[in-house]
Image 1 (cartoon, chains in turn yellow, orange):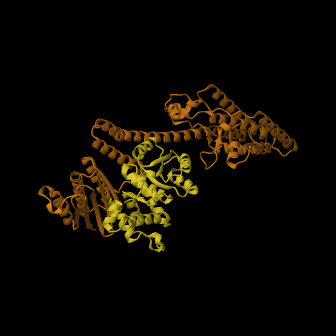
Image 2 (tube, one colour; image 1 turned 90 degrees about the horizontal axis):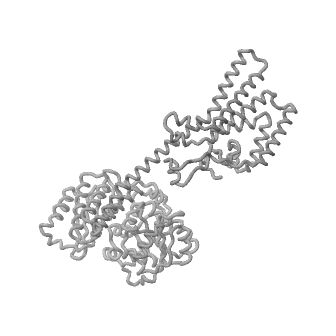
Length: 219
Length: 412
């Protein structure tokens, strides 16, 4: 979709503890990106990433040795430029919000189609964020109504009207291009809004956000 | 030594010389074990105080042996497919033990000769009792609880005793205890016959209770362990049953339908959803809007072999109006699955304080709203009218080649 990119140039490391999944991903996207390494647990992943210094790391959320969050923590301390796209079989809100707050620039489920995955890698590589419909739903939920008003003293604690609209369209299954058409804005503007939401998600110190993620009983 | 149950110390039996009390204390306090042992020996020489403290701690600290093995071995051991030996004793460091014994003996002699110690008969009685109890308890520690756990009825209480050397050791211990009781009552010179008899009987009973105590404690712990094992076995059986009912059946179905990729995908997707639900368990509340939508989604998925993605923000109790919106949503999903040609349908439900909206969207062929034929009554009858009757509205946005989005709204 992002025609101006040359996706074949993106250098990617795949981190997953299931060899079967790694080889499946390699088979699916190997022709479109340059695979420069892989890891199966936290130490091997960190070593592979620091050796290859890729553009994007496809990172499993659940990983022996501390999980994907630990990989992000260790790599970011040395190579803050490496970008992470989280992949998981689990849709649990706790995992999703957790890995985004650790620094991942996007989250997709493992059942994602190959072409969508390639597009997501390109988007993350160029510094944009990738929100699956489910992640958009989580964020809307996390930032929705029940905020205790006293804590809204920062911009970070609320989403703008426009950001909310964009997220709602993502949750409804719209691609960025379709969102741009729907809201009469450019794709670049859509990307800016999503990145801004990502920043708020990562930086907001609303304790509701973490609490929401951990003890939410979705009713 | 890493302590597997942090609160309170345990007696590491594989590092024990006698009961493992010193080794356990040393591990807990982070001191060298020899220092603790020396302290007990010195205290023991002074009126047997150290011995008494040692025995009390022996009772209070549960024994801990390192008998965790890989799961397969453990299960083989449990099912009796491999035999399990007794605890192996760590080699007692003969030099250190001899040195400590020498220090203790010398100090004891010094204290007794100096006149600060116990009277000789009391000392004799105390020593005999300590050694006797030590022997009985030592044997209690070293008898496997496995027979207790796996045995049936009364046999499991006696089974640990049914071994020659164990019986000899316990008997020697009991004889020593009896000697101690006799020595104690003989030592009390200022008593009448009746008083002496009472003392004899009383101390004999006390000695017996003390001798049996660790056995009773052990059996109680072993029974608790057996109960825990049974619970674990139940949990495993549940898991096996679940895997059999779900995953195994799906795998069998997939093999039989291997020629139909669409069916295979649908089966795999349904299984994936179910397994994920089971593993990460985020179940919507029963009787809620999201639960009802989830059911419809799964239904449409398996009936029509499409992928339906449901995302929800908030939830509400399923009232009559909301049931209408759920049925309308189902119709919209079925329409999209049947007519749009799209492989994926996105459903988004949002519950606001005063409005419930559900969006059903596909990227399929779309259609011209003005040309809805009568066989497309589904749209008008089951979607628009239904929502209108519930006090809401349905907005359909579509055009040929543009996909379709149905938006359903009901005020709360």
